[in-house]
Length: 125
Image 1 (cartoon, rainbow, N blue to C red):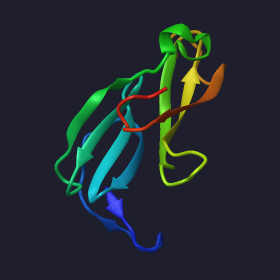
Image 2 (cartoon, rainbow, N blue to C red; image 1 turned 90 degrees about the vertical axis):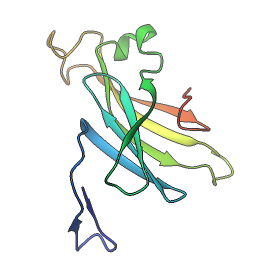
Image 3 (cartoon, helix red, strand yellow; image 1 turned 30 degrees about the horizontal axis):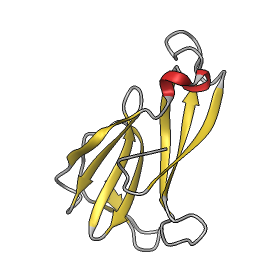
């Protein structure tokens, strides 16, 4: 992991095992990391960017019911829009792949972008 105060000069801070498509939010002096395991979205939390703990359940949303995402959910980006009057929630953008999986040959053939929202980062609609 690295950090920057000006987006030009970066300092290497360490390494943490996670899967692909990492997104980090800074919430009340705590870091919340979203990442993509083979399917779904996982969350880890840290107070120091060195020690990380898994948090919550694997996020798969309505994947079992969606043909457009039955193959895989991945590539998330989370945003905190709780202070925006018209939004007032966390927003999660993600990549859905389907109706078949990558191993069945559906990689980037039928890709869609989904959106979900949450009040607490654990329960998504």
